[in-house]
Length: 143
Image (cartoon, rainbow, N blue to C red; front, side, top):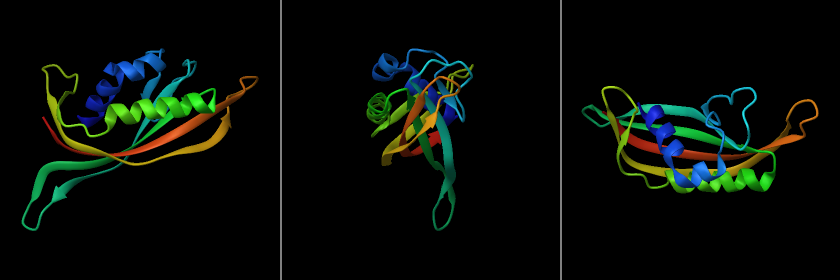
């Protein structure tokens, strides 16, 4: 599954792991309670098969939003930049982490945009949380 491949790419990227130290701080939809920031939340925005004039192919186009959270705005931006480097112009076979092993063949990835989001309160007495948002589209074939 592309979700698993994307998670594994981020988890195994040396730039990302230099900033994200809590193993639970890369998650889908929502960071777990008590996670140590910085962290990344992955959201699937859309996903559709590629349709030609005479057929629907096995190639899929999926768009993701990756939110980089931190307790300081510049750290959130730094993490977003590292995520962008890890995900830009991907091409190749990536592990889904399944058993038995399956691969997702990513044909390319393109960054659509990168921007900041307003800060949010981090909870009682915890200050603020800052978020930098990265919008990326992947074209791939599931293994």
